[in-house]
Length: 345
Length: 259
Image (cartoon, rainbow over all chains, first blue to last red; front, side, top):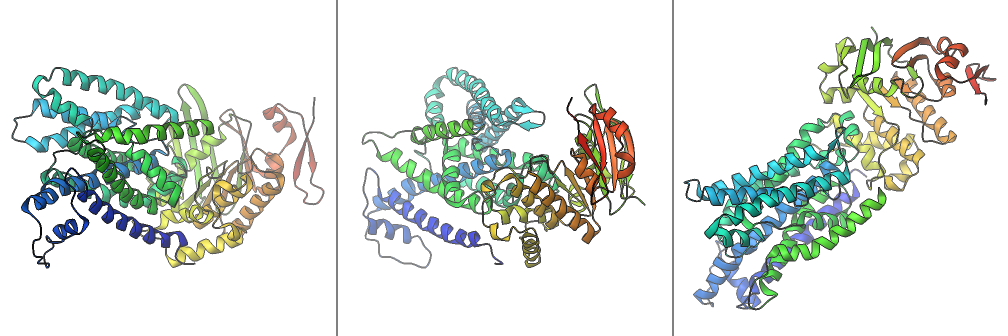
C-alpha cells in the first residue's frame, strides 16, 4: 500500500507517450512535399549520433531537408506544444477554472501586441531578436493583470466573470494590435502572417531561443504539482493548510504567462492547445497534477506536432496557418466545455 | 496561560461594525462553543482566529504570541479548520484528499513518507473510511464528505481544531457521528476545540464553555450552564424557548414554541 497505485500507472503512461512522441517525430520528418522513406529518414537522423558512423546512402539535398528544414520545425512544434499545454494546466489549476487558458484569457494576444511593438519599433536595435520575447512577456503580463483586475470580486475570481474579462481584454488589445499593424506599412504582411500562427520558415536559432524559457518554465511548474493539488480544495482551505495562496498564484500565473509569451513571440498566436490537451488528459489520468502536468506537457508536444504536420501537408499548393487547425479542433471543444460548465452553475 | 486570548477585538466591513470590543479566553483542552443569531459575527470571529485576516483593532494571542507573528505554515501545524461544507465535489480520491492534510508538515518538494502513510491509514480506519479510500470524493454523500474533511484535519495533527458550523448540512445521524469523533479526538489528544454552532442542543451536550454573540458584541461568556439561560437566549434570538433538562445527560436543552 505504500506506493499509491495510480502513481505506478504514471510511469507507464509517460513511457507510452515518449514512444508515441518518437514515432510522431519520425513520421513528421518523413512527410512533406518531398517524401522520404522511413529507413532513410531513420538513418539520416541516426547519423548525427556521436558513436555511429553510417555510410551515407542519401543525397546532400535529402540530409538538408531533414536537418535544416524539417527537424528544427519538428522541435519547435514539440517545444511550443509543451509550453502552451503546461501553461494551460497550471492556469486551470491555480485559478480552479476548467476554462482558464492563456489564450482564452487574452495573454496570447497581449504577448502578440508586445512582440509586434518590438518588431515595429525596435527592428534595428542591437537587442534585435532577443527583445521580441521580452516585449512579448511584458505584453502578456499586461493582459494578465488586466484580466485579474477585471474579474476579481470579493477576492475571488468567479468562473464566468474570468472568461468574460478575457473576452474584454482580447477585444481591447486586439484592437490595439490591428491598429498597430494597419499603420506599420511595409511590415504589415509579415506581421499578419506571423500573428495567425505558423511554424513555417523557422530555423534552429528559433528553437534555441525557446529552450531556456521552456526549461525554466517547466521545471518551475513541475515543482508546483503538489501545491496545485492542494489549491483545488479551495483557496481558504489551502490557506488553512499553510499555503501562501496569493504568492503561489502570482508565481504560477507569471510563469504560465512567460511560457505562453515566449511561444507566441516565435510562432505567433496558436489558440486552444492549453485547453484541449489538459482536458483530454484529465479524462485519462484524473485530476492529480503529479501525473496530469507531465502527461499534458508530453501530450501537448505530440498534439502540436501533428497539427503542424497537417498544416503543411493538408493542401498541396500552400500551407494552412497552424492556428487555424487548432481553432478548428479547439473552438467546438471550448463550446462544449462552456456549456457543461454553465449547466453545473 | 490560556491557549487563545482575544483582547478588545473590533472589525468593520466598510462602515458596518461586525465585531465590537470582543474579549475572551480559551483554555487548553476545552471544547469552546460560539453561538448567536445569523449575522452576529461568529464566522468573522473564527476567521480572524484562524489567521485568515487581521482585525482592525485589538489583539488575538495564541499562547501569548500575536497571531500575525506566526507564519502560515506554523499556524497550519497548530490550527486545523473544518469548514461548513466538506470538500468541493472533486474527482480526487478520499485517500488523496486526506493525505493533503500532511501538507504543512512536508519538507519542500518531498513526498509523503511511510510514517505519513501509516498515519493516514490509521485515521481512515478510525473514521471507517478505509473501504472508501479509492473512491472519488465527488461520489460521496454530504455526511461522508464532512467525515473526509475531519480525517484531513486529523492527519494535520493540530493542537487546536476550529469548526465552522460543522453539522449544518448533515442529517441527525451524521451530526452525532461527527460530534462524537471530535469529542473522542479531543479527549485522547487534549485537543482544544473551538466551534461555531447553530444548534443550541448540540452546544449543550458537547461544549464546556460558550460564548454568546449578539450584533457583534459579547452578550455572555462562561460555562455552558451559565450561558444557556432562557431569558437571555429568548431575547437574543427573538424566539420563545423552553428550557428543559436532558432526561439522561442532565444538560440544558431547548424546545421551540411556534407562535
